Amino acid sequence: MNYGSIRYILGWILRLEGVFMLPPVLVGLIYRENIWKDYLLCAVISCSVGAFLSFRKPKKMTFYAREGFITVALSWMVMSLVGALPFYISGEIPCYIDALFEIVSGFTTTGASILMDVEALSHANLFWRSFSHWIGGMGVLVFMLAILPLAGGGQNLHLMKAESPGPSVSKLVPKLRQTAGYLYGIYFAMTLLEFVLLLCGHMPVFDAVCVSFGTAGTGGFGTKADSMGGYGPYLQNVVTVFMLLFGVNFSVYFLILVKKWKDAFQITEVRCYFGVYAIITILITLNLTASAGGFLENLHHAAFQAASVMTTTGFSTVDFNLWPECSKNLMIVLMFIGACAGSTGGGIKVSRVVIYYKTIKKELDYLIHPRSVKAVQMDGKRIEHTVVRAANVFLIAYIGIYVVSLLLISLDNFDFITSFTAIAATINNIGPGLELVGPMGNFAVFSDCSKLVLIFDMLAGRLEVFPMLVFLMPSTWRK
Image (cartoon, rainbow, N blue to C red; front, side, top):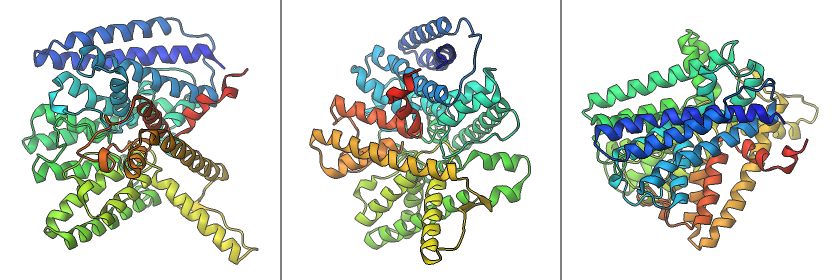
């Protein structure tokens, strides 16, 4: 284990986090809130500790998969522990575990909250909540790879694979640092475009910034108690479109930039992603229309909520907890499917669902025709056995964590739907669940022990399970 390289990278993570805390300082000064002093103090502490850890670069920066997983897991934990300090020091979230829950929910782009009254927060804290979505959406280590020369590209790929969502990660261009730069360039440009379009709909500047951050990171923290319910149809439609766009694999946008249009639009995962979204939206619309309301109004809300849940953003225009049972069950299905691999969304990922479907089909064909030899393919290419195996192991680990988490939080004695969807909302990085943790509820009802379980689930879901499990394995730390 190369502890020197891990220590060095953690130091840079803290230095970057200290820099990220400076915009809330500016927001506090603009709105004349004394809380800017708390953010400045936390920024100085973070930068100072980070500078101490990364003062001297190790002579040997070589690290492999094990170091990559450990570094990513530790980075997100340390980043969350420090990121919660402004909430706690300011006194607006007086319990540190609650503050930790809130910032982990922000960094992991979950959007689950323990706050009873969001609008009572200062502008600086509201900004930090939403900004944490934008930081965590693409990944802070991807950002660091884009601006800092660390180790060689092949070794940096271990960091990128451990942090990026999806069953596999590859370089868009030969140099990994250039790949990270392209990803963040696309990410920034799309965020800026949404911000401009929201301003065109007369959304206040502060709200437009926070909503853009929340949409880009597919997080869902808003500045209003009713989330997006109080805004007009134009603004809601803009957010719907961008939630869907940020749920697409960012490799598609790179292919479009280099004018490989045919390759971009022939990706199976993307076609399945939009196909599932369209089908579920139509089914929910028909189910709602059969109960009450006009078709176009129901289509509008169904399109928004389906996009919000499938991309694991968590914004809401209505309380879908009040929808008919069929519509709520369809929403639960979307919670588990999630967005595309290589996007800012969470969930199991469409690519894995496609792999599972093709694997089942292959096995059924083999039962009927035992002598046939077929390989699982996607986009006309054979899927490597290691990818299929990793997808299967992911599902087993995912189910194991889900079951254990459900048993642990059931000690709080809430109803099954509340507990089941609370796990689904956190491990899939969605935000709202159903019943007590629905769009108009929050997670404050859970005990501190249950909140710690849910915090682990949020981190495990954002980091695709494996980094957190590798971190907990005793054999990882043996020589």
